[in-house]
Figure 1 (cartoon, one colour):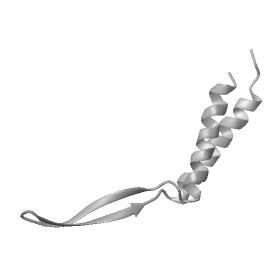
Figure 2: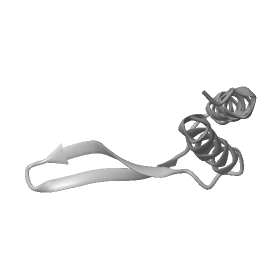
Figure 3: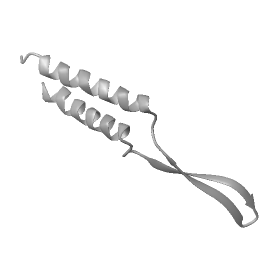
Length: 73
């Protein structure tokens, strides 16, 4: 019963930490101009906002505390 909450909680905490230190990112291609076969595009490095990392940390903490506080049947 405890592992049902602990494992996802720990994973969410790790994702939150990675998000806050800037290790989670992705590239986004934006097409600016296309004329015939010629194309002008820009690649942007994007990362999640800080509130996403804090939310993941909070949700993971709630799951871990809930898993530790749950009673065994």
